Length: 310
Ligand code: ATP
Image 1 (cartoon, rainbow, N blue to C red):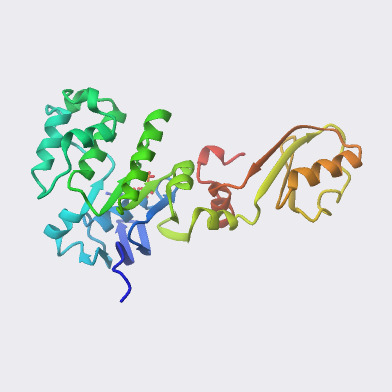
Image 2: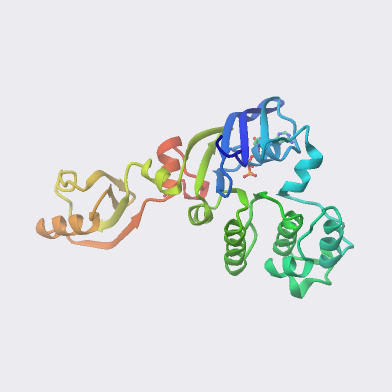
């Protein structure tokens, strides 16, 4: 018999009045995977993981976590699932250490409080009240609390939002250590870099639906190109010059820049062709396709609305 998946969600559907937040989403997450749920604001990411965590009731569909029905087997689920959701409200007058110790009493075999506080970088704030922590520190505490029961499956919603780059790297290392101990992690994010670095597989969500599900590399392949070269041409580029190259898939103008997308050694091919044609190119840049490019190819929109005009 194949092993029980860590998460098995089938045809989940959730509507809030006129808004269909989750529109028939099915996902299977294997044991030990870091599985990303990526999408723009409002795509339905949080609602999806709230349904998976059993904290919201779907209109239709079923969820099993390690074989447990999340609505019916709640007591057993608590012992194996750790959840960090956005905007956790905790008792403001309690300190970091007091909150961690309090949560530890909910579990049979809790993780040692000191080690956990250390792993999220809060040792120096152990005696600080929750209400006096910065947003990033509150975020880190909520992650520690999600891990206190030594869960087998962890849901982390916007793991590093509001954290500075150093704290973000620490948090990524914490997640990688967890994965190394065999814990399954469901990671909600709209940070591409985080998902590309951490996730084994990613579900791209748009308007409540899974528009693609693959490894980050597999998704990037769906962008239809691998490399992008951009430059400014001081003299006109002869028509068809770049389009005729084997490495080139698309050429377009973007403001004053020429954007060339393709595969292989694109930069070399484009540079040689321009030199041969006597075109002077400046501000030449070369970059790899990213998840955002795949998202654009699949949905016609960018993941990060601020880059919509790029
Ligand atoms: P974000 O990245 O902003 O957290 P998200 O991808 O997590 O977004 P959801 O929070 O799941 O998306 O929201 C999906 C849709 O459902 C949005 O249109 C949102 O406005 C709506 N929605 C979410 N929660 C509620 C609620 N409690 N009542 C009514 N509408 C809701």
